[in-house]
Length: 150
Image 1: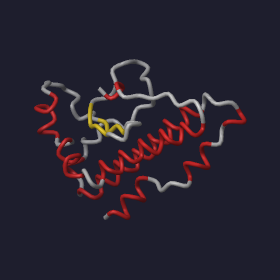
Image 2: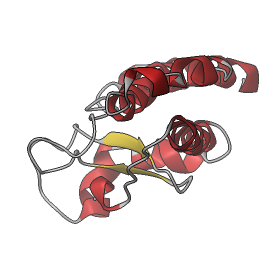
Image 3: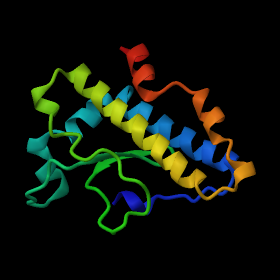
Image 4: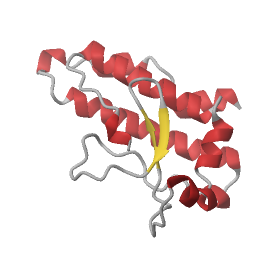
């Protein structure tokens, strides 16, 4: 499950490293590993891959991990989750959209998730330590990087 690979950055530099690693893994999923990612989100194959019969199988999420790996899986079961959740149901519209449009939609949702995770960690910092946003702003958003790849 996605929550098995976690980190708990405590400084601005650590938060930026976490953000960068997660971002890097998501860029790889949406570009170089795109065929694998696309097939993992196939609603017809999701049941067989997970080995379960689930009524909410369309609620798959794309997770980027701080070790630069990515995975498509169900959302975390713990309540509340350890981290903010990525967009649910990334595979829901997959077959009803053009592939590039769907990948762009996933990228936009992933950008939002990455920022929410960075700000979640940043909320633990004191007033003088909160300078993570300027560092994050220097990187392209996933959506922009994806457009450059196409």
